[in-house]
Amino acid sequence: MDLHDYNKLLDRAYEKIPENAKQSSRFEIPTVQLRIESKNTFITNFNKIINTLNRDARHFLGIFLKTAGTMGEIRGQQLFLKGIYKEQVLNRLIESYTKAYVLCDVCNKPDTQIQREAKKLFLKCGACGARRVIKEK
Image (cartoon, rainbow, N blue to C red; front, side):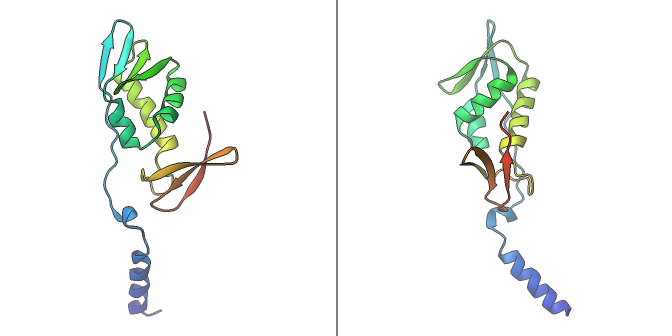
């Protein structure tokens, strides 16, 4: 194969890559900001976290509370948790959720959506087109 033909093929392949897959921005989850009142913990920047993850608050809350092993609810712009929790523990739980339900396994981008087909949940990537089954915890 001629080097000129090879470069043409590379150019054509690169043109077919979606724009959002070409960007190399780093995805960062906001760290939790806590307020502790008596024996309760409030995540005051809960809406910012949910908006960054681009997930339904109810889906996140169900899994987050289950893994944290506590009760809680959304109160206005913040998340109320029964009990006192350290910042590192909550950040680790959010990171775990992000790896399982937000980031694509193939391209590691957060441009994903959760889709339900029959009784299974799939994580579909909008950047690279990959799709995988989500195991519900």
